[in-house]
Structures are given as C-alpha cells and as structure tokens.
Length: 91
Image 1 (cartoon, rainbow, N blue to C red):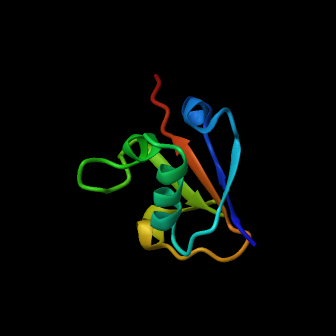
Image 2: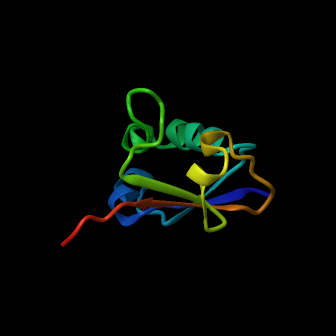
Image 3: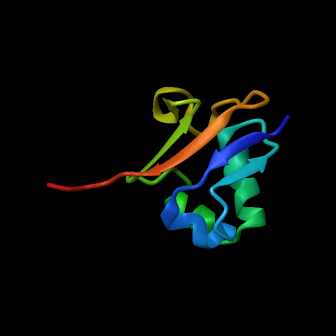
C-alpha cells in the first residue's frame, strides 16, 4: 500500500495541482527523493543546500513532526500520510 503525501497549495504548481500524491517509500527522505523524480524542483523547495529540511517547512508523518522522530530517516509504514506544511509567519 502506498504512502500519501499532502502537498501544500504553494507547491501544487509543481505537482500539476495535485493535493495528494502517492509514493512508495521506506523513509521520509526516500519519499522526498521520489517526489523530486516525479516533480523536478520540489526538493529544492523542501531541503536546504545541506540536504536538511528547511527551517520554514514542517513535515509530519501521521501528525507527528519528523523533527521529533528521526527527521528524514523516519521510517514509513504502508498507508502512512506525510503532510508538508510551510510555516506561516505573522503578527
């Protein structure tokens, strides 16, 4: 069973306006790599030059922040949902 990746509105122009994309990946990092293969340019929006998730991008697996799990090494099980959420600043 594939995993689902919820794409935020600002990145949907890269995914042909798809909100939910299915990937077959063992880790969050592998899911990002698969997204990059299918949708060139998405990885640079998610990862910095060191290959780390950008500060202003939050990634969740089943509503748990990967920063409190194993970051990109966080394992995925069949049917897990990854949510990419850009941080919103305001005042």
